[in-house]
Image 1 (cartoon, rainbow, N blue to C red):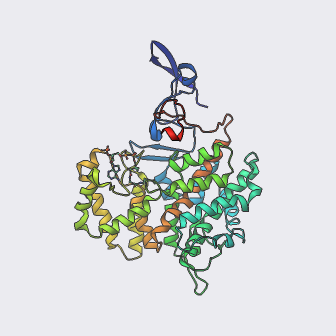
Image 2 (image 1 turned 60 degrees about the horizontal axis):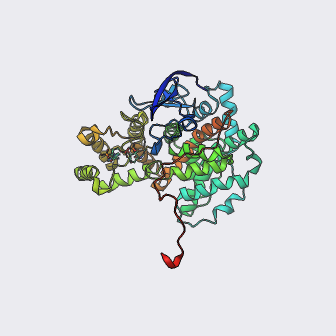
Length: 431
Ligand code: ACO
């Protein structure tokens, strides 16, 4: 636990209260208000938690003003250039970059857990064929606690570790099965000779009738997309996982809660919404119409893939993703893709527009990821499931960190009640 470095003083109704100030290793200082209610009988009010640190964490750091993202201290740009998704998983889970032997052991453990219980195949068949793959994933990941109840005891470190590896290993299989089910194709079993990302492409695009060769360039691009989404400190879905976990719920149930939260269009669902919006715009000449709509408060329309709760400069992941989009589409020989042209022109126009500049609205990670996934052959409905696969390691790392805390408490926010004060029940005849 961080130690107080000094005190702030709050004066209320003539009384003064000391609030310890704690200094993080990076980022703004934090006022410790834990004793405030007990001493001063007041709560703090912070809807959307825009100014509240809900926990101590040593995993990920974001400086939204300068556009910096660090995992365990390492900048995302360096990891994207030099590392791999599974190495970043190790880093997030265990705190340090692995040695060659540690990485090989970790990769082997993940690879050997990619198959799902055979009975799960029947479980899938209970879903409607046209179900969104995210709907299927929320259900199937939640059901993992029924299929793997030998790793649901959160007080046993070994079971926690097994659950973590199982989820990292099986989420791609589950997402690929959700996709195959939605298009009426047979499930494809994982192939242990392939990389994590390559195996996911294989499970999505192989069919029994034909050989499927994983394109290494696409596998690398997929690995990078996964890495760029691996963790993002206390975002909505991660906070959901922590809140669910704070009651002692099992890890599979907590990750299912995270997936449900991620689905929303203001969060993980934005990558699907963004590509659909770019397609709807269609041609560069229609961009001004959409910019005007985004600026009109009465339209209810927002530019998807633009803006971020924390990044008020640029999203460093968007820069890497834009470069990746250029590379992938160039290698596939489709660099003149009209959607990419619309995206680039939209970005250029928005970044010169006073509305977006003054509100510090920049493209976020989702702005370009959909274009890459589309070029790979994924339908938009698979974009958010791919985000969910990638973020699973972040959720688990944050959950593990929370469970390991000595004085871990159930999460229980307070409220500013604005309903009727106490009143007496009125019999129905007199209402
Ligand atoms: N288009 C147009 N205007 C916008 C946009 C946008 N995409 N985003 C924010 N604004 C405007 C708001 O209308 C508001 O204007 P006002 O101050 O005049 O009322 C101002 O900018 C601030 O917006 P908030 O919603 O208060 O900002 P917040 O930090 O709460 O929201 C969010 C961030 C939800 C990401 C928002 O920017 C948004 O809805 N973006 C589009 C969806 C999206 O791309 N989400 C992906 C996020 S990244 C991720 O989850 C991986």
